[in-house]
Length: 256
Image (tube, rainbow, N blue to C red; front, side, top):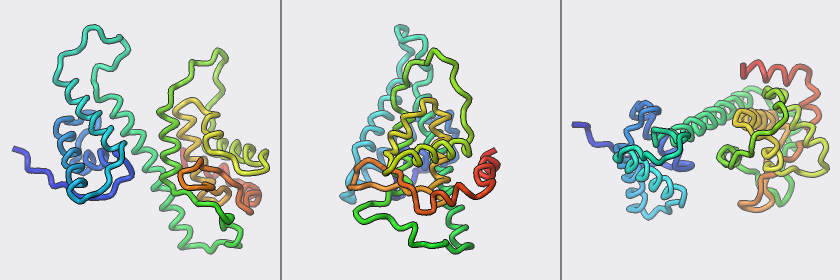
């Protein structure tokens, strides 16, 4: 008999964050999730939130419904009328979402740690140049993560007839973003940058490139109003960052 699971009331960025925490803390194989047990633990956490009068976001409730749906499908025999391309394991889509979320989370944490170490070791030149303008709101790292996660789950366009171009490296993607921002007189919407890339690999590389640009303080991610579109704006030292010899090559070395 398994020992009862102790629900810890912690703060999570979203339902995938909660699910991933439940899985990793119990050292569960993410490719073989015991869906009945995880569903019960997930619901227990939501019930605890209700007991403490905490607001439960709609996406947490939607994930609960998804888990119950997956649990029900696993109890039923396979549908003989299902399309041939439908995954046999109803957990497969959830597993892919969790793996993508974990990749984004690890990348964000890695760059945040690097920034903290550099801030503790080096003084920033001309700190006045990095202040955001009046009326702007500096977005959090998780706002950027959520924007790219939404892009990963958008409907994929039909495959192009032409031969797809070679995927860019992180350094090359940074250079491409530099040209996009340089060509614009004002801030550029993050969505306009994201929609240029259709493959999952390109979106992940673009995410890493943007985090590097923010870490190097070449770009600032802001909003002009709460919950407004995320805007990318050049810092005053934008040109200086890209003028440093070997900077982009060094970035590619880190991600090899």
